Length: 438
Image (cartoon, rainbow, N blue to C red; front, side, top):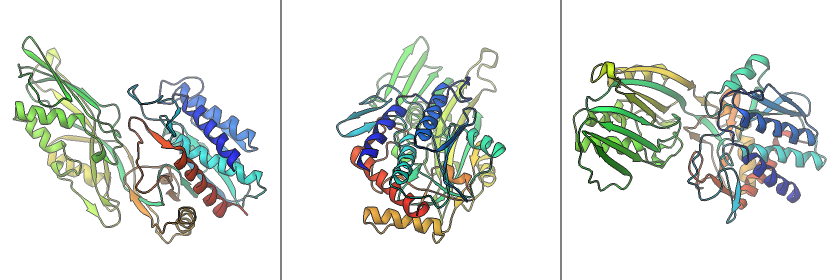
């Protein structure tokens, strides 16, 4: 198993070296060359392990072993964007006992852990009780078009897990909705732009104000420049996953707080409505016993003053990421937003909630394996994140973040210690052995 772990680390670094942020379609993948290269590498690796592989035109690839009822292990090779302000190489580096790289925990590393766990079990002479199918998707972070295509051309396994959440076992995932919200631009706001994805806490937001503001500011994360009769402002924040917006520092919030204090009026109204992680400003502070509280993240904002519409009928467009309790629907929340914000609200993308009873055999078996390796007595949990487990009739998310551990997913310096990575591999090895091999 030790030799296999060393190979796993090498392969993980090789996979991390491929930039697989979604890019323009090309010959190898509709999601860009990086995704295509990752899927090709997966197929090559799994084929060398003796698995049957299939690359579906760069949408996804499958790696199969065994016979009988199909059990799915679903994850993805695409990643969210990154910048160059990292402590180590965002395209893979081992430093101070950690593996750094975009995707090392979301989701390249965990999927490779599972693949190499199966490889180790096969080499040790264990026989699969089922057909095990790995599904490596290429578009999880920005649309799930890979899963849509899979369902058009193949049959999704009924049971399985996705190593793309948290330990011990996630049997409940909140509803995940991206809403496009359109409101009137404040009259003094000439332009505003910030964010890259709805599912990331905004790291930078810039605006141009049609008035002269004092350049003195106590906040070192805000830069101000006056040019003529206009003021140029840029606010900086800290990115985080939208399912845990409280772990980030939203640059849009910082900008609106500044403008609410300096200008007031319409800016104060926007701040009061949109700058609350629990949705209370928008009148949707909701929760239930099964899945907990709603989360609210302004991920992207844009708006520009066009000469033909100067100060008239100008609109600000916001992409809001909401993770809602399982007992509510996306339509109910859309209606509440329309009424409470007085805004145009449309659904950009969504994944309906997932809930699998804690006494389901899949949940109990995975939990037992996890507890056996860690010595814990853990129980299933709920998350706001969205995983491929939702694509299954009976699916859960299983790892890779350990309870109490630091999660750097979607953040600067995404990383995992080599110690935790080995522990992660051992958990997947044990769970897959107990669940799928004889």
